[in-house]
Image 1 (tube, rainbow, N blue to C red):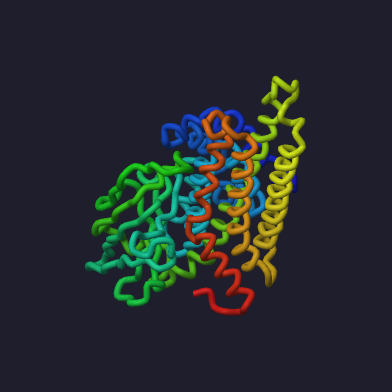
Image 2: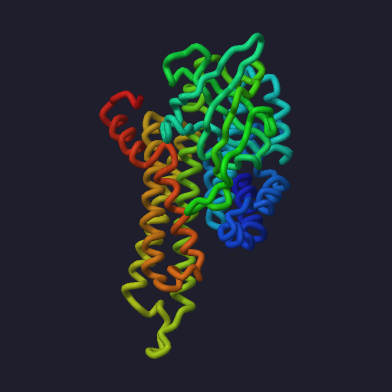
Length: 382
C-alpha cells in the first residue's frame, strides 16, 4: 500500500472510531439516517476519494476505495453502503463527458458539498436493474421521466440521483438512458420509510418519478447508451465496494466474537469462554474466512486498476464470494456468542442482520453465480 493509500485509510479508521462506531448502535436501533457519520464524511475529503485530482479529488483507485469502504463497514455498515452508492454515482458522473454540469458537480463532490446515489432498480424488473420498465417521453425540447424506483439508498436524503429509464421510443428495455436528477426536483417523491432487517440506517426507500422534467442537458449519456455506462462506470465499483462492505461486516463479527470470548466467564469452572477449544476453533474459522476474502478483494481491486483478461470474472466473483463469506462468518458469530448475541447485547447481532443484505442486493448472489458460470463457458451474460 502506498503512502497516499495509508493516508486515506488512516483517515477512514480515525473517522470510523471517533464518529461511526459511537453512533452505529443507535442508528441501527432507530433505523435513522446516520447524520453524524455523513457529516464527518463530508468534512473528511473521502467523498472525493475517487474524483480526479484535476477536479479537487484525491484521484485514488479501486484498492484504496475498497480499503476505505471495508473500514467504514467494520464500524457502521449503513454508512458504508451510503458511501458505496455515492462513489458509484460519482464515477458515473465522472464518465459523463457530455454532461454540462460534470465539472461543477465533481468539484462539489470533492469539496464534500454533494452526496449522490444510484436509482436503477425498479419495481417492475426487480433485481434486474439493467432492464428498466419505465420509459422517457420527449415533450418539445425536454424529456419527462416516470418510474417506480425501488431500494434507492439515501432516498430523500442525498443531493442527487442517477436515474435510469428506457430510452424514448425504444422497445428493448436494455436500450436505456441515464439522467441526473437533483434533490427536490418537481415530480419526484419518496415512498414509505425504510424499515429493513439490516442496514437500517441507509434510507433505502422507494422513489417515484411522475412526469419529472429532465432537460436533455441532464442526460449523462447518449440515448440508448445507459446500459453500457452502467456496466463500465458503475457496476465495477459497486461489485468491489459491495464486497468490501461484506468483508468489513465479517471482520467486525470476528472481532466482536473475539472480544466476547475473552470477556465472558464460566464462573462455576473458573474459565473464560476462550478456554473452550470448540469455540476457539470457530473463531479460527471466522478469521481464516475473513482474511481469505480480504486477500481476494485486494487482488480483484488490483485487477480493476490494471485490467487483465480475468478482470471481469474476478469482479463477478468478488461480491458473491464476499457475501457468502459474511453470511457464514456472522452465522458462526451468533452460534459462538449464543444468548448474549441472540438477546441483542452484542454488536455481532447487528453484523448478522447487516450481512443478509448483500445476497439479495442486485446483482444478487444467485444471478452472479450464473454470470460467473456463463463467463467460464464463454456465453453472453445478457
